[in-house]
Amino acid sequence: MGRVLWVMAAVGALVLMVQWNVCGQEEKKPVFQKMDADGDGKVTADEFTARRKAWFKEMDGDADGKVTADEYLAGVFEKINADDDETLELDEFIIFFVGAENKDKKNAEPCKDESKTTFEQMDGADGDKIITVDEMVLYFEGRFKAMDANGDGKVTKEEHAAHKDKGHKKMDANGDGVIVIEEMVVMPAKE
Image (cartoon, one colour):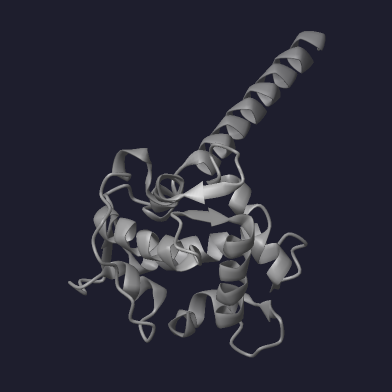
């Protein structure tokens, strides 16, 4: 009986270690890889929506079905800031969202049409309803430039917070100060 309990405890510990490792690896993946559920190098509208739902749950720290401005901002700067200094550089931003192997695919003009949804902006000029790595690099390069208020090539925590606050307000369709899942997933056109 003692041997069976020992084997069960060992198997349980192994399962927990595997789950912990898988969760840790998922956390480290660039955002594009998290969105690209089937791993084909493209993000469809369905994959995009599924990732936004997962992102909402990650942000909703108290699991009340609402994301406050504080929850929306919590920890994001620190996750992107790989060198743990006081600013974000464009390479850190691109690596966080699209991966280190894509950090040199910059310097083109991203979509700036505010009437388009985030997905449509990421999709770029071809409008094929598929987001590629190259399109996502352009989108996030544009986002970085928009955050860099003083144009010095670095984003401070204050610049990042101001931009995220603006983003939170755009998603808050009814203006009640919180984002609910419907605003995050169903109403991205206002972004």
